[in-house]
Image 1 (spheres, rainbow, N blue to C red):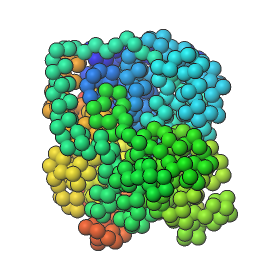
Image 2 (image 1 turned 135 degrees about the horizontal axis):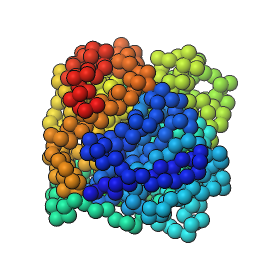
Image 3 (image 1 turned 30 degrees about the horizontal axis):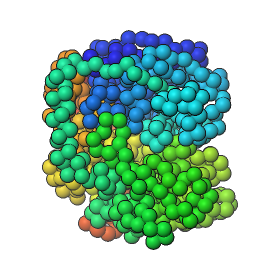
Length: 615
């Protein structure tokens, strides 16, 4: 139990919706969500398919714990071949949509083909049909969600949709649910737009059944207590959100600044969690209004923010005065430090646009940072940018580009290419801070060595959520390791990668792992699902998922040569802070990583490894 045992297959070309039984043999090997969705994708598409071809598929998948009362059990993932990267893509989202999908009776929805005209999927308790979506095409995520609820007269419907950016092919478009929660990276929204699929609207009331209710309730209660007693999940994240990291990472000299030209940002304090909570001089009100939680979450790290009504951005868009989806750390870094902008209201405004039009603030901000460096080097001029002065620190340029990118207009359409394609277009490929086409998140691999290896080996391109060694290297969770050392980091990264594969596949939030280990998670899965879900088995499942993703990428044309970092991190030493004088030690860590993984020196899983993992 815990799985519904049913998937929904939607053939957009034919306009049909068909129920199918879940492959339970695969469920026992891949658990759910990220792992199980990846297995289905690998079995059903050619890894070399064009991501925007009708032959690519888009899978929305829940985990076995999704929809239960386990803490944070509201997650779902979108699995496809990424439009930004051409690699395996799996983007995870919170909010309430995942719970609704599970309670509507489905573990997974598989979209294939392409509709002739825009459509959206409507699901109610096991009944699904495609609806005419032409009336919502061209509308923002916010207007689409409100419009669908109004059309069907049900404010409890949960909606996941794309904005104009997804319709028009911005490479890093998201799928946004509940107005501001997003399956955010790798261009999953771009793939959805290529299929003429505007939205998925779901209402579910069927409930989720677990294998051993009494045992499950006991394990869940123990898990919640661990979260409540932990300083990070019980205090830090509820009060400060992920933005609590801004000053911390800046102080340790690992905050990438102005397209990684520097590793510390003078304006970090002005865009930090502390700044969000302080009353503004202009109107006496703080940026942060309150925190918010996703379904079943006892952490509540989400932000609801307001902008000073006299700020230039609000004067243009008064509906943005207050909105959910305030700044989180990664977005604040990308929109702020990466571009040199320290205007908190401008960052909040730009982030609201990312939510409304559905595009990834990490890739957007990092790409703007690359464009600003090209502008300051004279590679780009106002002739290229449509008259916009793209100097580092220009807040008005940032917000203007956010509006243009959301509509794929003017120079915003070029920003929408992502940094790799943009920098290649202007013959400056070395200025793109990316791996496998995906932009770096908010940690400098020179100041936190484990994150450099994490970025280089991440299956979906540069990503912090695939192996958050920051927990160990900076926060001391589960044990403290030296962020400047390379020794032992290969094993640390592998441990995080395997464990995170399990967490993402279970249907819970990775933030629980600030307090939980698999010793806390395994009893909840074991009580919810039939079968053996011991820690040892879960670790094997996590390793199997990682290698399956790796195999997809190799079949798609990636090689070990793609497991690298930009020359800036490998050759140019950090200029300030504890990491001063250091470059990334990737060349020391990568060979050991391959060896510990059971891969060849070229990064190919051996037959022995594939056999051991039943791949």
